[in-house]
Structures are given as structure tokens and as C-alpha cells.
Amino acid sequence: MPMRPEPPHQHGKTPHIGVLLCNLGTPTAPTAAALRPYLAQFLSDPRVVELPRLLWWPILHGVVLRLRPRKSAAKYASIWLPEGSPLKVWTERQAALLQGYLGERGHQVQVRWAMRYGQPSVASGLDALKAAGCTRILVLPAYPQYSAATTASVADAVFAWGRTVRNLPELRLVRNYHDQPEHIAALAASVQRHWQAHGRPDVLLLSFHGMPARTLDKGDPYHCECHKTARLLAEALGLSREQYRLTFQSRFGRAKWLQPYTEPTLVELARSGVARVDALCPGFACDCIETLEEIALEAKAAFMQAGGREFHYIPCLNDSTEGMRALTALCEQHLAGWPTRAVPDPSAAEASRARALAMGAQE
Image 1: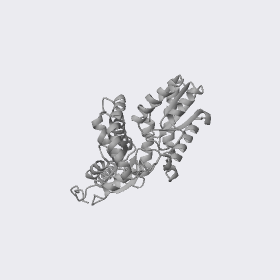
Image 2: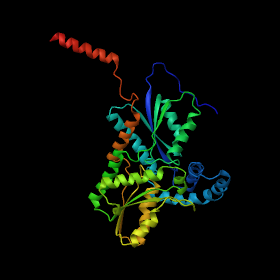
Image 3: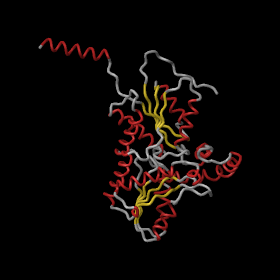
Image 4: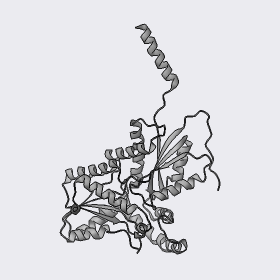
């Protein structure tokens, strides 16, 4: 395997510390042409589709990549922002703010962002940090709950990059933050702020991204971590078990997925007489097609058509103050022990002491 070229070495250069914020990925445009390579990369990942390649490859290239790009493009077009994909826009803002928040806390770090699928890639983000002189890098996957299909896939990309690097930086990888107190507090604050402006619902729906049910049987902790996030958030909000529901969305294919499913649950709630539902997606760090189109549009339509009267989607943490403070605290926890704070310049310190002595002599 060919090695990547090393950046020029400079003796005496102060080493830097980097943070790479990684999200799932997004196409470059809401078109079938842009969706096709993105979906091909995403659905070719064996962490995402755990089927034998001989079985999956003909389905992927013969059916899925011929039909799904056009359908997905229409969905992306319904939520596309002037600046681009919401996931890209929010991830980029989070990275910029994270650098600022860490700087305010006295940490000298360089923050970049990357996508597991699409651009900028994990490899290009690591290359950029290494070229900037970073000898220690913290990789922060933007997934509160651990799953092999998400967090471990980011680790795969990091390790694949590492196999092509001669002079490896020291690496750390955040595994999860599903029960981080600051994260739970940030989620609770966003819900309470919404309720202050719009009143309280009959039921708060907590919808997490779905995973095949077999992943739980095989030992993936994702299902359990989703339940813990929901329980801690409900406790922070003072909700009884009857006042909230945990569901799973984004099913694909005919296999059994983690249950209960989001849309059927909403239909059931509406038919049982529940008038208002507020929905929150605590498994997403920022808004994307799964939240803005699947929940705020499709799930709302299903609830209203089944007899519901009012449906509110509560946005993800995105670039909110509470959310950024939680990410900052998470980084501080995982950066502990690395020299992120400015080291005093010995010559400047000596000059300062000399001025102090001179002022003392004059007095």
C-alpha cells in the first residue's frame, strides 16, 4: 500500500493538537446524479449493510442505485438550504464554533470537520490536520449513541488512513456521549425552550435512527444506549412513562428492525385520541434529511392524516449555545492530559520578571 507523502519536517516547530468532528455524510446536490455516488459509497460499507457481497452487490447495483437516487433526490430537494445540505451546513458551523468555544476555555487546538461518506472525507480531514503540524488528534464522531454502523465505521476510515501514513499522530476516538450530563441538559433545555414558546404536548416522541434488529442480538449496544438517553432526558424533563414514547425510524428493506417503529406509533397515537405530539430526534447531533424530511414532513403528515390535530418538530441541538457547550465539555474530557493550553514563552516571562524587578528598584 503506497504511503502518503509526509509534510516537510521543521526542527523546533511547536507540535499542535487537532480535533476532527465527523458526521455521516451528504450528497453535494439534491439530484439523482449527485445521490448515486454518495449512496454507492454509503451502501457499500459492510458496516452499514451486513450482507455477503455476492448477495448484496447485484441488488445494490442492479436495483437500489437505479431506483433510489431519484426518490432520495426529491426528498433532499424539499429540505435543501441556500448554503447547501443542512447536515453539511450545521456540521461546518459546529466545527467553527467548537474551535471558538475551546479557545475561550484556553485550549489551543485546530478543529476540522469531515464526512464518513462524501466530502470532505475523513482522510482529507486527517491530512489537513497533520499538514498543519498536529501530532495529536482527537476524532469526534457526531453520534451520541455508539453503533457499529456509525461510530465503528468512522474508526474504520481513520484506521484505513493510518495504514497509509508513515509518521502517525497520536489518536483518540470518542466512543459515545449518550449519557453525558451536559448533553442531556442541552437536550432538556431545547425541549423546555420549545414548550415555553408553544405549550406542552400530550406526548413527547423521541425518535432514534433505526437499525436491523439482528444488530442487537449480535451485541451492538445502540438499542440500550438509545433507551438510556430517552430515560435520562425524560427524568430531566420530569416526564412520566405515559408522557413520552421512544421509537425508531428510517427502515430499509424487508428485514425486522428495532421496534417500535416511529410512523406506526404516531398513527396509533392519533387514532387513540392523542391530539398533540412533539417530536425530538436525540440520536442526531444536527438536523438532516432524516429529521427535516422524514420526521418534520412525512411523520407529521402520517399523524395528521390519522386524526392528530397538532404536531411539532423540535430541532436538533445544531449550533445552539447549550449544544456547543456540551460538545466543548466532551472535547475537554477527551483532550485531558494533552498540552492544549498555551505554554508561556520563557523569554517573555524573563522580560516580565526583569520589568517587575526594575519597577521594584525604582520604588
